[in-house]
Length: 156
Image (tube, rainbow, N blue to C red; front, side, top):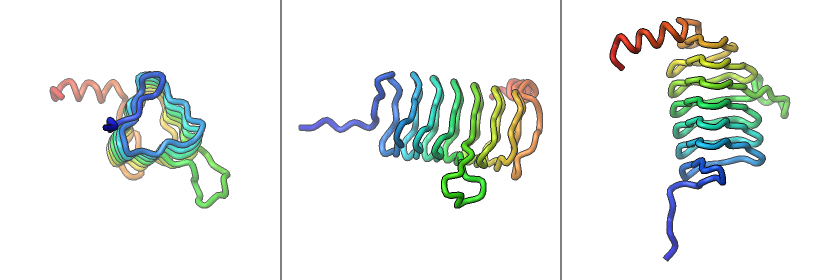
């Protein structure tokens, strides 16, 4: 009898849960965990320790740093004015970024290290390090330090 597995394990030990789409020429770092129903395009880079929750779409050429958290149903695009016939502007996400579920990141932006993007945010602009943005369209709401202080005060 054949053994049925619920995930694929990369040589680095990272996992991607079935079903999934994984494009060509992707670089997946160690300790990465990618949830079921994700679409990872061609030439995508995901740094070590990053967690990608289920049903996330990452377009061709996007780059994600180390130790990031990407919530479920996030859409990361590469085409600002579709269809652009391959004239893409992939999103770049630096290290230690948190993206809440259901967020949409519009092509050509950069999320700098340590920033936080709230659930459901539609982000059309690049975000500086340690800033917290949310809303539609996404706007700067506070610093990461303020966010963490509020989180700690509320006990969650």
